[in-house]
Image 1 (tube, helix red, strand yellow):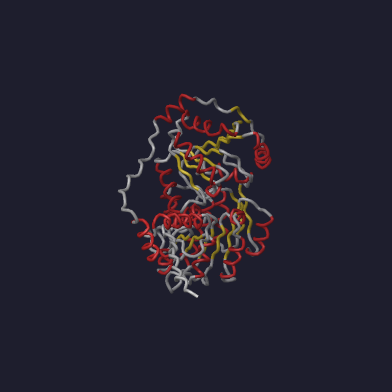
Image 2 (cartoon, rainbow, N blue to C red; image 1 turned 90 degrees about the horizontal axis):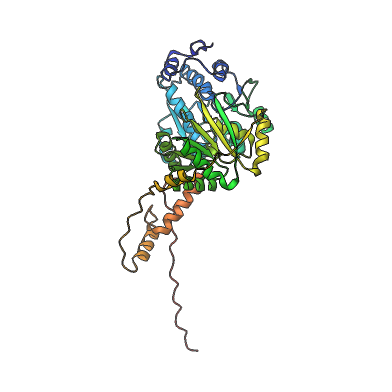
Length: 467
């Protein structure tokens, strides 16, 4: 078996790897690390959960530490990711594995204030992990210098294309030096990926590991369920199995919100995470889920490739994905790093096409089992034990006319929180729209209220003159 010590990594990196409890590299790491250390371009096909992040992070850190510029901290490595969660995950890996090296790194994405990110970049970083939209925003404001980039990594390139980032990626490429090392990681090799590969990579080495295959330790089960019975069946599985941590996938943002609310009403703590949630809300929901405060995290596919949760035991496909490859990414959230996991899918009659597509992709037949019998008494007891969040304290009555006066004063100042309730609602709506994409036009400060328009009083017409 290959050991990390045989891959040519430096002592500080081997020490960091050992501190994480790893001794043997995964197949993608064993094949990718030597290629990257040699300075060659790499095209890698690897599923989520295979350890690909360390496959490019470790050799990237070593190459940058071996050739440090005399000018200090210059931005020399750029990692592009499709989602904020994945950017945060990669950034955490860079910090963890580079803890014994004199390198600085930063993570930037949309949905949060851009000003702290600009301050961080101003201090100088060697490695930047970014979503494409926020990177272009920073460059457009003159906050980032991409002229010294030596290494470019496109992580989950197929997902970036699916999310419509191809034009942003091409804009970023025009800002980079022509001479650089390029690493492209993708779960699939679609025609679009092949075209992108031709534009970016130069005589690349190809590495392919278990493409479109699910982890061996993941136990998969499919239950035939009427569409209207899915929620009680899911609640039955959670309660009867005493599941303390389960990630549930829906197709739509509205469906994620509705399901999390239904679970809450049935006494099962739940939270939704999707693109319309502000970054602060997404971060808080994920933190509560990891800590065990929230029992169920309901997510759309935006979370399928960006969540890294240690020892996640259960994943449920509440609705089958439209794209069969997304099934692999979803259930890849469990059974990670050698751990076992369970993936359950609730299949209704109208999802037979999606089910057959999954079988075709994985080249295997799955037995569809009858749904578990719902214990109504169990659900009733759980719902009765539910304690709703404390209601907000009633506000003291305001004197007549006070609200209108405050709104007019707030309209003049335009400050956050001073524009009355209508201003707050407008600000919240704008933040949600900005958080739904990585690129937020204009300001994307969390919590900044939109400036309400001041309503002008109509001028009195002068009294008509006698003719």
